[in-house]
Length: 85
Image: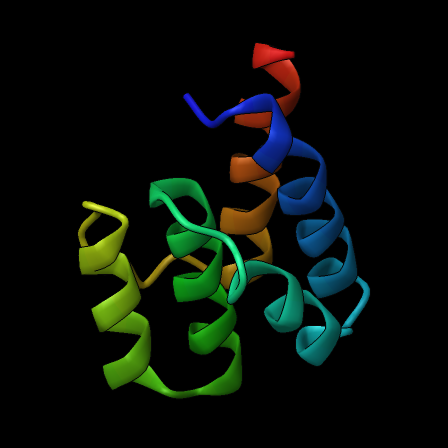
């Protein structure tokens, strides 16, 4: 489970990404440590079309690379965060 300090910026990054603001979302998660920001980072690179970088970030997040549609995956991450809070 992420620290409370990471939850708000992660949710913000997810919202930005869902609204098509990949760069702004990326700026948030690239400054955070841990598996949750790494997972979001992985999805963002998947959106960008950079599969190699996406796979790297999935490994950092301790998650397998998936072909799941990025927005669906971001919504799943968001749901897991909002259920925990």
